[in-house]
Amino acid sequence: MLTLGPDDILLDRHAQDWQAALDSAAKALAEAGLVEAEYRDGLHAREAQSSTYLGNAIAIPHGTPESRHLVKRTGVRVLQFPQGVQWHDGNTVHVLVTIAAQSDEHLDILRQLTHVLDRDGVASELANASSATDVARLLSRPAVAPRLDADTLCVNFP
Image 1 (tube, rainbow, N blue to C red):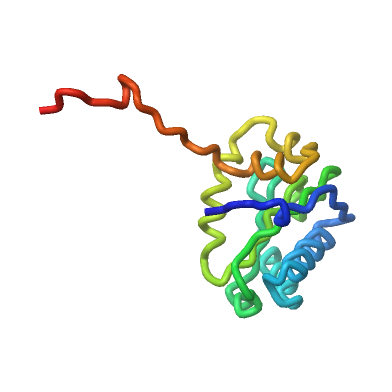
Image 2: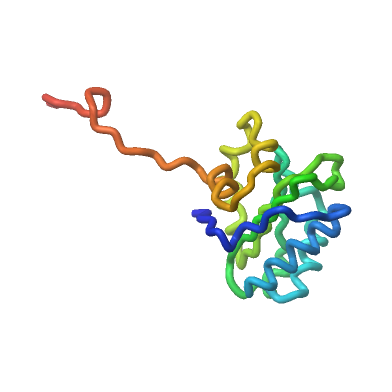
């Protein structure tokens, strides 16, 4: 389950292009002790295969299977680019959810982010978010509140 803490989210980043954005993301992962510095090459190699742009101004860069040995522990760093970064596929990215995964954990993170992709206005909200808490809230699936009422309770069940 993707649980974002304040240290996982880096606000108000700037990059001239998508390569510089990936370099910033790799540096953030390395500084957090999640990866070796060489994981940067894995991020670039994966992006060269195909774009990690998901939609709604979000990309999920991650390494290649060949770069997994550079991952010390699985984790995520979210970088916000309020001015946006022109991605190599022509889309504008405001948020990188950068993944360091020792196996296929990035697929779970991708599944968790799918609810964000079809929400109107979320790209603008992510770009304009002024706190890590706001970014985490926008990227996280809302908690389901348990209900006990006439619609969920079955009485006199045979």
